[in-house]
Image 1 (cartoon, rainbow, N blue to C red):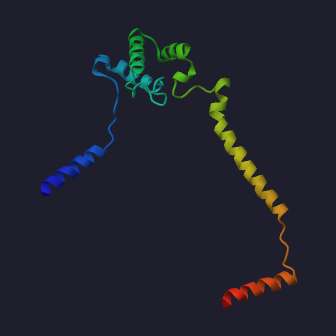
Image 2: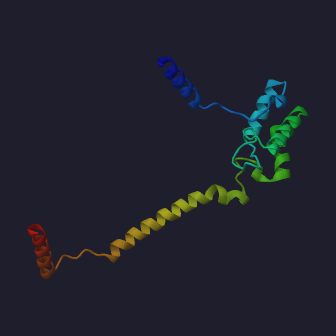
Image 3: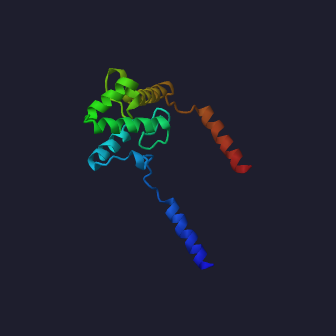
Length: 158
């Protein structure tokens, strides 16, 4: 009984350890380890157009497999990393990159969240400043003070 519990505990621990999974099949791996390393680095920066928020290195989609094959074929033919990126961008646009370049067409993507944050912060500060001006503190009149005292006394008695 104790052995079974220990075995189950060990299995649970091993199952909870995250493994670096990859969708690259053994048939795709290049013979040259340096080219394979470059292919993996490139694949991790290229978006799977089917999965969209996953790299082609992590995706099992058939399009991702085709893109990995294109990357490896171009590496074997002697293309540089930039040439491969340029080829894919010409074909699919900047969206193919997981981290699109900063340029005029992507400014809103890169700087939009920062602008929205500062706009919200500015509006919050303006709201707080105006609120203080709208609600000036005035002391209670003698009548209001008397009513407040009577309400407090009623609560204490009741």
